[in-house]
Image (tube, rainbow, N blue to C red; front, side):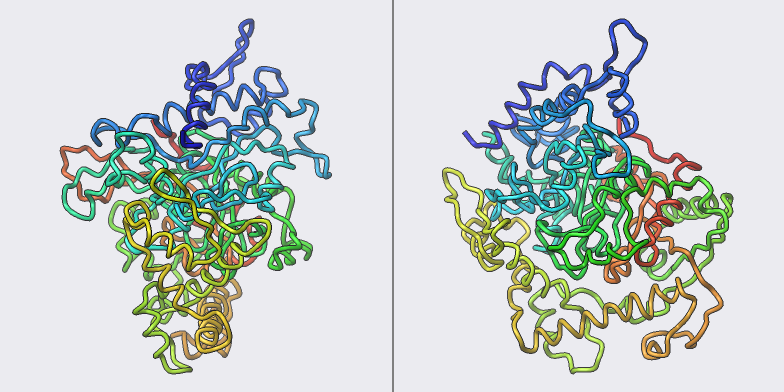
Length: 624
């Protein structure tokens, strides 16, 4: 029997007794005290522990019961012939040791304090995106080519979470390889999830492999391509889709996602969560399946700003195996406790920039989302903030300078004369090959191992080329959307030569456009002389200096991602599902978030702004 099926059936059998209390709550027989699982915060859970009305084992049992009922099914998917609500599919793996881990927790462990003995996440169930290495579960990055991979050790942040008292409840589904393998792949799809679901007899391989948004967990009803492939009618966001779904649906207390560009912000916004994309260097990437060290980071996904801040304090810190985190050795950059920055008055006197192009205009924000953003701005103004339009000075060049993702892009980039702005950047492609090969070559986390079945023999995977080769051997499960991005990355030569020179030039241009001549101008109020060739405003003082930039949803994720700067997204309402489905289908509204972004290591200020907005608006409504 397939190992993951054994795990799920064990989990289901273990948890079924707890189904009723999982959906309602538990309390003492002789007391009016009651613990409500839905929307329970870290503080709620730990208060229940202290009061003796809850134990870590009881809590894990409740979550496992919800997972068994709502998330994964032993019945062939899609359910009901694809009509009606589908399993959410937010968990790639449920930790078969979660109950035992909870049972070993010492009730006398400290839950607070500033010293190393404190366990601020004592008894808190966490879901990790399945590109974060765990020694007790597979780490697949959503790829069937890595479906059997079991690292020898935890990623640095997984180890930190355990030390802080967290219970790793399982690994979350994701858009395959963090949405950097194929063109046109819907968020929340992966070949590894497809492979797992197809092991259930009677499953439809043509329709499975997707996570579903808890605010409308139905299959897109359209019969025309590409929408008739089983994808959800309401996008999950990605690539950290599983943690975003699970946290929102109360299948875990908090989650950890990763982001290269938008992969925390997108699923957080789509699932009405709070997401923090940290400054590059605040959180270690050691043990995370990479796209590129130039932009990758990990960060919290939670239902409240408070819980996201608490989780960030555990994740942040220096790791000798990630040189970028040396920045945490500088006082004032990284903190153990970000809850100290929660301030309902933080927006009083704040100066917020709103770049309109292309985020509101060219990206097609539309009337409904424009109203939500204007409502958000009005709320911030009522809290004492000054909010005004101010464009990113380099935006005319930046917005025409994309990311190379195809073989044709690589050929065009190679033909671009030295000293001219190329049509696209090779930073992600180059980094993907360089850093994935390094991860797979590491003793602790590599080599990878493919999934296996009666028809698919296991294969050792040591390089990106091996991933591509395995997928080509098994296209029926691995290549629903192809692998054009992976193939383009593998074209590049990461040794000395033109490709390396182009990469270095592209990285320098990325930083010039997004930092020096871009976002830094907003935050410093100064246009440097070196920016004359890429900005349309005069060199020198701008007369404006902003604390943060405000973007709709994840529309503005790219500049902060390239710059390595932090962003925080917070719920901001609902808008009609933009999918053009028949009115008779009754598509339900989509969650929407507003994003604050700031300069490097401005997490304290951004968390304060997000908290003030959250406390004034209370937009989050849990899915029903």
